[in-house]
Length: 172
Image (cartoon, rainbow, N blue to C red):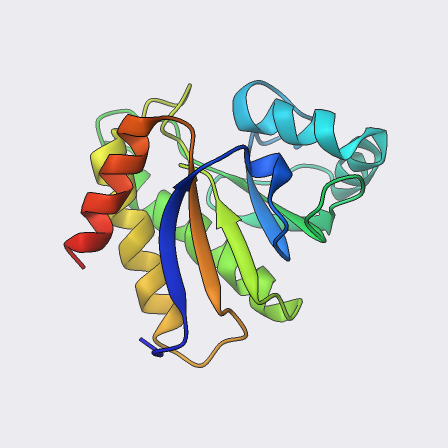
């Protein structure tokens, strides 16, 4: 990995972060929902919903980008994580694709800083230890190439999640 790229977990409200892009753990409609998705839509304002309607949805594992509107972040990268079924439906590969595709969009839009939530570990039930390992491995892999990205934040909701991400990064 390039020496200049910083990767670290924080405990924060992702909607308050002053980064180039935040990632939204969205549902396939992209029209808002609960958890991180709902919080981002509320904070960004109705313009985000209009922009998401125009995108026409997003399949699991893929990503779409919109402006950040009323958020401090310039962009919102929406990605649809897999629902956990015991890894019997390629969930690990789909989650890897979420991170890879979100980073690809960030790089295409010349982002230097990006913040990820813990994709699929809430209502979608993906075990957080596995999700954190996938997230950190994928970010390290992508950042090993020359990119525009200088800093990646894993924005955690709870102290436990923060510790899991710290551990996953320590094992890298």
